[in-house]
Length: 126
Image 1 (cartoon, rainbow, N blue to C red):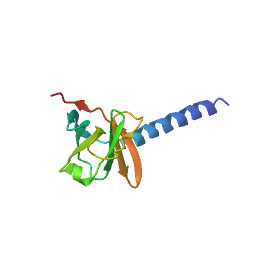
Image 2: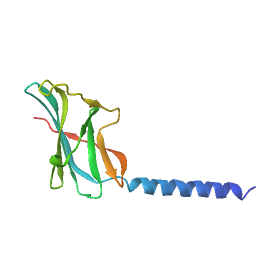
Image 3: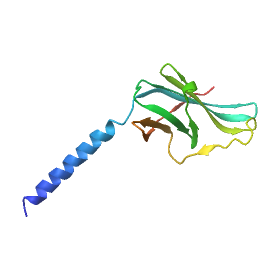
């Protein structure tokens, strides 16, 4: 009985360390993550920009202030993605804003799996 408790603690500790290392591999290095708000021509929203050097993952959508916007190839120039996140518009007929309760971040796809990484975007003021 005495030997089983230390073994259980050791196994639990080992699984915890393994879990931490496996989760840390999913975290991507995102650089120059910024956003800027705009209000023009009956449209309000944010311009979100970030750099991603990892070509093995594909950014699918960005979440900023509870609003989700899909990312397409058009949003990519080199390693930099620039996404127009529309919060409100009268220009696009029947436009529906997608909402998400997640914190600010980016949804990615890797090996047909979708995962979310929180990102601290820096606000650029005019």
